[in-house]
Amino acid sequence: MFYILNDVERRKLNEKIQQLATVTAQIRNTSPQCLGSPNQNLQIIVALLEKIGVNPLDPVDIERFTNSLRLKYLNFQELNCDTLVLIVNSRRDRQVFTVAGRDAKLSRDVLQTAFHRNIGHFRQGHYVLGLEGMVEYIVSSYTSTHIVQVPSPEVLGPTNSGIENTTFVAHGVRQKPEQKISPEKFDYTGIAEDDKVWVDLMIRAGGRCGYDPTKMTENIRAIVEEAICGYDPTKMTENIRAIVEEAMSISLKLISDTRYNKIEEISQDVNSGAGAREKAWADAKTSFIDSLYTQYKDKLPRKVSQCPKPEPSTDPTPAPSFGAFGFGK
Image (cartoon, rainbow, N blue to C red; front, side, top):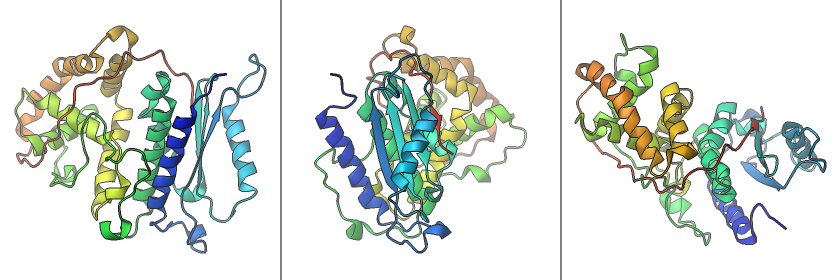
């Protein structure tokens, strides 16, 4: 019999959720409905199914199933303060649906981004990695939304769950405090609307790494992949909210950008072969990044702080598309 997660993976995912729960427990929910429930914090439940329904020919309504499951659970919970996040993964239906309670204050965009950042794991059948990534992003977003006072590292203390004891890292890029150029202070007058997100990335990349045109694409890629990496809530400092919001702002803009989506399509195309992501960024460099830099370079500010570096991709050739998915409101 096939299991979506084996015993070790289920235990690992549960430990990850419990580990992150100790972090959100330190943060008071700011929703007015939760003022009388100071101990009510973010709840995350993951439901794993082989298939919804028994007849393979019946249409699947994963949204209806998820909301029904959520309501049954809430019958035994505090109704005034609804912070439940329910993630349903149906393997044979190839669908994931996420619904968040009103008082979690997690928007549809947040839930959608949590899935998009990890869709590659689901496509390749790495369900535990996809679910862990979604949970990490949801916790970071919840923290950013509700944070009022961040406990010091001494108060929060180290967390040892028996699993990874490192920060949440993607492509070897770590999140760290740094001096930044504020893109809001840059005058975007005269910048084409479709170019603004890439000019923004050039400013961030140049502000950290300098404006060497031969390295601009590499530095932009590092900024992008740092924004997609997630955060280690056990190491949050007083400026974590700015870091989280900046990265979320970048990633949400990129999701709707056609040129970035083209990079992702090439990276995940089974016909791209080995090193697909490197090829995708190389194509982006020649097709539009170099020309954009030439067009706007005289307008860019000149200041350098810290420069993240992308790690060469070691991802295997991706599998075919994961299929449909949905999100709760």
